[in-house]
Length: 227
Image (cartoon, rainbow, N blue to C red; front, top):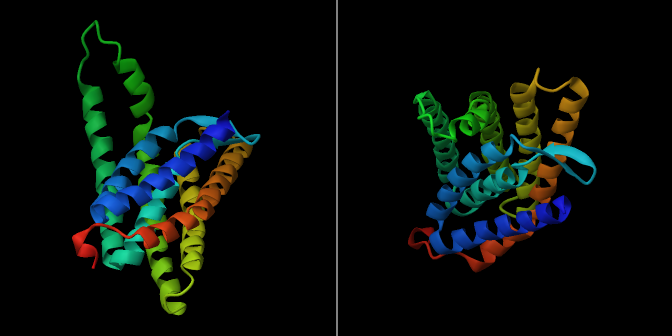
């Protein structure tokens, strides 16, 4: 069930990136970056078994963030992609700060949510720090590599720049995130397995998103500023 659910979720999420790009253009992509980045940092706390390997959730949503920034790069330029990266970073910082403030409020005796919020968001500062560091490093590299490859190939081979820039950036992201988030939490072999499986699943989704970026180019967008 995990494997079937994971594959279906990947197809649905990547499809929604194309749909929102079609309907809302860059605004839809900005919204997706913020939404998926926040949600994947909640899902990543949960570890699951997929195809016999231990990995964290959140890799699908995070991979679709790369699809969104690649679409911004391809159709709106490097500056818009950088703007999307920065917007996601600011949203993640705000979520972390706001939830830490929320935990400081003294709950009523009848409250049942505080222990659950503490279990999730009490661990969030470390997760958020790891995510922010990994996100900035990997996404900055992704935007740079995407446009570098676009220049070197004279705008040809969209599949090449989409896959190479994303897969290398995902490796950087997984390495930084796993080290900062889970060092001392898991033993070495488990940490290594999480890194490897997390990257493999992200790389798989990165390859899977290739038809979707071509589909987005074919259907275009209703964004008036696109032209």
